Length: 71
Image (cartoon, rainbow, N blue to C red):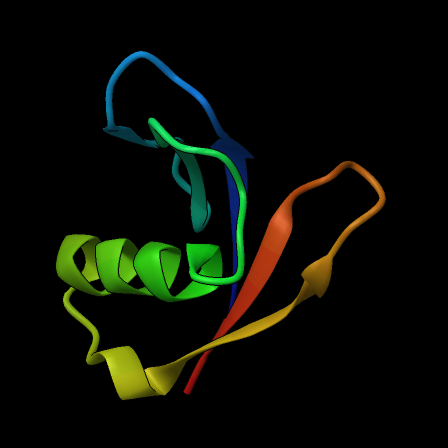
């Protein structure tokens, strides 16, 4: 199952919003870096109740959404 996540970096505070249909909006108070994927996977794991080792980053779509795969 695919999960689409729109990420807003450099936000004033950390926030997580659900839009149904496996779509989420995450605000993060830092710039995108090499650890961003791990942080996002951890947040998704807590929010949807799936172990971290079952969530994998796939790619970004043409709209800039980050696509994650659940196994």
